[in-house]
Image (cartoon, rainbow, N blue to C red):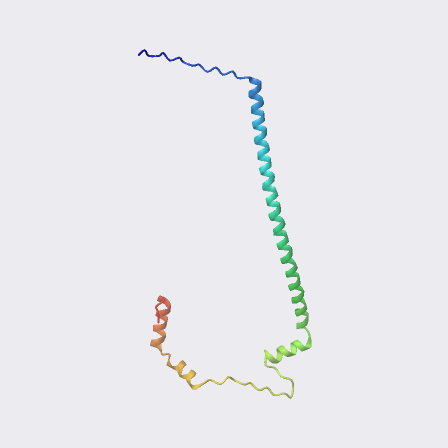
Amino acid sequence: MVAKKRRKVKWKINFDKKKVTETFYFLFSALVILFLAFSCFNIYEKKKSSERDLLILNNQMKELEKEKDLLSFTLGETYSDEYLERVAREDLGMQKPGEKIFIIKKETSIEEIEEVEEVSFSNKVINWFKDVFNLPE
């Protein structure tokens, strides 16, 4: 068998300078256009997000204005004589001349009094340690 002689193939590449520059400009332009499209899309998304936030804030502003109106009405009501009289009677325990005020106290049962008295110093210390160290009862 006779060994075949291999031929070396030389690749001959002819670069046309005009085609290379046109290809470069085309790829560069495509890259710039893609970058601009991506940037426009991001700006559009931010705009939509800002519009949603603005709508939410406007709704909150309307609710707060309603609350402000209610509070200003209530504030105006506090200067009325009826309101001042009610506060003086209920909260401050004041009375008109000639009136008598009766205070009704809640009755405590004997069992409640005994429960309060049962807690001794040693029980208080034990309960404190249980609370500090999270021990079960």
